[in-house]
Image (cartoon, rainbow, N blue to C red; front, side, top):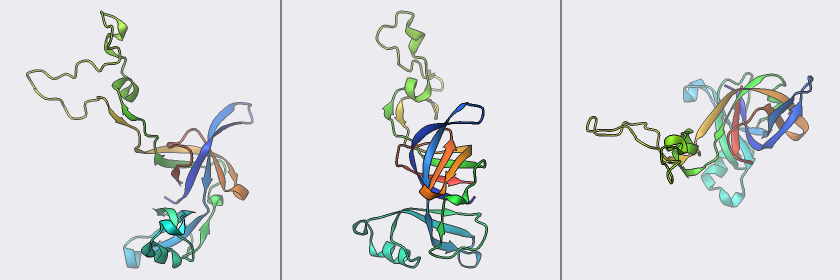
Length: 205
């Protein structure tokens, strides 16, 4: 699918024509520079490599500098390949937020907020042992039995237990584009998307 790289700015809300308050996310989408063109003849598939957000010169290296100089641009912080673009693009072309239109549906993927090591109540929505009844006095949020006995004498893989939560790639599908603001490269999308403020997201249509 074709798309753009963006940066999550934050959340706000808009009123629709019926006066309903709609929660939405503001994304700075592009402009993205075409840094490489994949072709069927050379690479075996067709795709565009897009770069977003300039990187400081001291944070780059000669290999990266040479790659981006071919496209006539500086090194970029985020580089992603997209397939499915219609039309002809060449190195150095810029793709803006106008690639999207108001009312269409997009998929947004990003890295969810890291929550650290969490227990089963927060991580999996458990109710706790005994729901504070049956004499429980100091282990209300404990996982309780994990089901193993002399047979099968082991814990099955995938058992929901305490552990590291968040910090994973998450894709939210079929979010409606409420507003496109070309002069500020902003995209307003209905609903919430994964990640903290200023985190990179990938918007596909």
